[in-house]
Every structure is written in structure tokens, then in C-alpha cells.
Length: 283
Ligand code: NAD
Image (cartoon, rainbow, N blue to C red):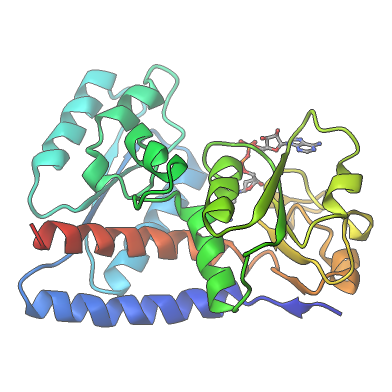
């Protein structure tokens, strides 16, 4: 039976540490500030944004949310980003994706100052990660790395198999694993005989977006299984990309859904905002 990695508890510990750091920063005259921009009325996006605002406030981050209607123009959004780039009270800018079709996400991400890009999506930050430099790393894969670190699971010399190659999760998860001295394989929708590859893995990171896709048959006994997926099963219940019930019988350690990777994602957004505020304060 696998050990269950409690992402919720780890996230809570990190947020407590961050709150202490923020209290000290405030006493020294800096309040970390996060601006979130949302365009349109996608209910899931609004839920995410509300939860980011609530989590920021809970630990003492100054938080602004800018909500705009679905017909907001690309030009006006770029102007808003520019204004936030220049705002001295704001250290982190996040534009909630997806954006309405008439707005280019690439243009908007490119417009965010890399120094305030706490989502880690700007090409400058992605490029720095590729060459192994410190930058803002994408929150979900960075959260996975922090979670493994807190669990004392070292990636050094381990074979990490990442399933999924998205720019937000799969690719940065592979690069951060490499940075932590793992031997890395990336699998994706065109990979042949996935199970033969994942069975060689010491650590499997599943970011596929298909409910219960990874089963016990995909795993080597004792493997660490990180489930990034947030899906709904046929009964509408939240589930991951890993078939938890079968996988837990073979794995050495496993993250549940919910309560695994999910709580780490917002935590790392808060972490990146504090990191940015510290960098601005040190200038
Ligand atoms: P995506 O759709 O952008 O990417 C999915 C990847 O899976 C693709 O690269 C594709 O090549 C690969 N894939 C698809 N079918 C496959 C198959 N049959 N075999 C192997 N690989 C296959 O999704 P994403 O944005 O990377 O998200 C992945 C999952 O993680 C989703 O369920 C999403 O909701 C979830 N997610 C969770 C968090 C979190 O905070 N926990 C954050 C982001 C995404």
C-alpha cells in the first residue's frame, strides 16, 4: 500500500511560512502585491480567480482583481497590463487563461514584465528555466518539486517519466526534474507503448487530462506517482489522471485528487509573488 502524499497539509505549512515572511516584510516597509486580471465570464475561471484572491489575502498579500467583460478589447487589456507593469504596489501580475478568442494569449503574456510574471509563462522566464537559471517557474510543476522536496523524495539519479507535454505542466515538469538531476523521459499522445516506458519509472508525473488513465499496469512496484489531472468522471465526481485505487496497491507513494497537487499550485503563486516582492525590495 502506497504512502499518501498530503498536498493540502504541505501547502498549509508553506503558506504559514510565507505569512511569517510577509509579516517581516511588512514591518520592513514592503507589502507583496498581486494583481489578477480576468476577461469574460467563464465560471471555472472566476472560481479560480476568487480562490487566488482569498488565498492571497489570508496570508497578507495585497490583492487586486480586475474583472472585464467578454468583449473587452485586446488593446485595452494590453494597456491594463502596461499600467500594472508600472504600478509600484504590484509585484506579481497574472492574467487568467483562457482569454476570449479575439485576444492573443501570446501577445498578452509577452506584454507582462518578466520581473512580475509570477505564473512563469513569459518566454524570458521559460528560457531561463531551460538553461537552468533562477526565474519564475510555472506554479503547478514547481509545486510538484516543492512537494517532493518536503517529502524528502530526491530526484537525483531517478528516472522520471512525465506523461504530457503542455507548456504549463508537462514540459516545465520535465525541465525542473532535469534541473534536480533526474533522468527524464517525456511521453505524450503519440508515444507508443506508454506502459512499457512508465513501468521503468521511479517517478511518474501524469498530466494527461484523461480520467483514471494511468493504472497499476503502468507502474513499477514502489514508484512515486504524482497525479496532476483535474477531471470529472462519469458520475461528475472530481478525479485525477491516475486510477488511484489500483495504483495505490503498487506505488510506493501517491498523490490523491483532490488534496494532492491542486493545493500546491496556488501556494506557488503566492510563493512567487513574495519572491518577486523581495527582489523589488532589494533593488
Ligand atoms: P493539455 O491538454 O494541455 O495537455 C495534455 C497532454 O497530454 C498533451 O501534451 C498530450 O500530448 C498528452 N496526452 C493526451 N493524450 C494522451 C495519451 N493517450 N497518452 C499519453 N499522453 C497523452 O493539459 P494540461 O494543461 O497539461 O493539463 C493536464 C491535466 O492537468 C488536466 O487534467 C488539467 O485539468 C490538469 N491541471 C491541473 C492543475 C493543478 O493545479 N492540479 C494545473 C494545470 C492542469
